[in-house]
Image 1 (cartoon, rainbow, N blue to C red):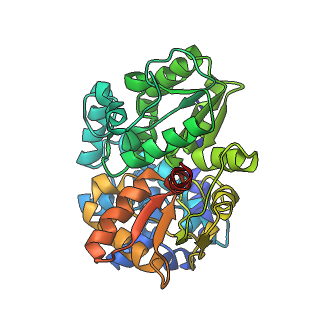
Image 2 (cartoon, helix red, strand yellow):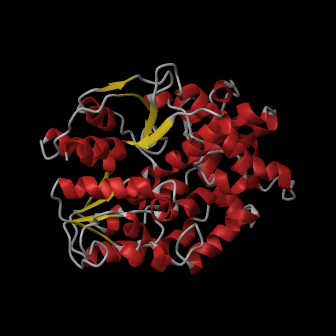
Image 3 (cartoon, rainbow, N blue to C red):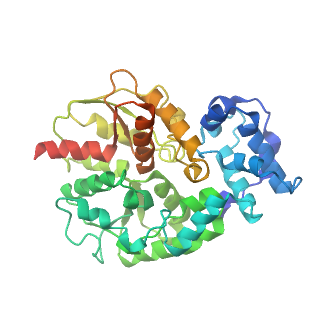
Length: 387
């Protein structure tokens, strides 16, 4: 397991900061809270205090600021001195966890993963119940012992009613392309991202070993995901356990299938904007693949968001923020929808089940009647029009 990602030299990074304030202009949680104590500059100070233990009795309210962050890395993107601020936040949270200072909700999540192996604290043997809602699911998708491709569904896509249509759509698209794929079913366990985001690094190893062993036993050559955080976690922490196995996000696979002519798309008259999910775009560096697939859909018109690619906005649902401060998550999501729902846009298209959840909720809270779709749903809809 590549733990070096979470054990950087904090003191060295902290010493570089010039307190210029560039990060304040792009930090969406700070803009909602409005207090300097919630700024990235203040979090840097808290990170230093945690590492040096200069203030062992940090107030709970001050500690909360460290977790009022989505780990979106917009601050990292604009830092003129090149400080990897997302990495600093992760290391600081790890230090907080070691000192037993993590918020109570994150400790509850930790227990849910130990017992149920998912963040929703639901029986893990119900992970595949979304198949029951499909009109014509592939036969024995969750019972196949061998497959070239394993679709790692993830917690949100497995259990959230708002995200399950995305899961169904991706399954239909892969079946339409004639791929040899299977899911892990109840053998699938959380990838470990929520623990990593909480700073509970050591807790991830059991999940990693279990999931990697299951993929290996299935003889897969590729693992695909529609969750960017799952993709990022597997690429950073699972690669050494599965040498020779490719890890691909759905949008990367779709771009290949469309480009190779394995998916035939028909006219879909729809004007959309595309939202770059933080862990797919800024943190995963995947920008062109989703746009290639959208461009291949006849009749579809893409209006680029004012803030896109490296400067893409956050849905509010990353970095465990929804568990720590759900009200703040809602505020960030509503602001994002207001920015994305530009004149003429009929649908917000993203490529993340958590973003779909957040935007669907935000459109209701903001009173904005605009459709929210995952990219795989767009492709699925174009395929359905062909039938």
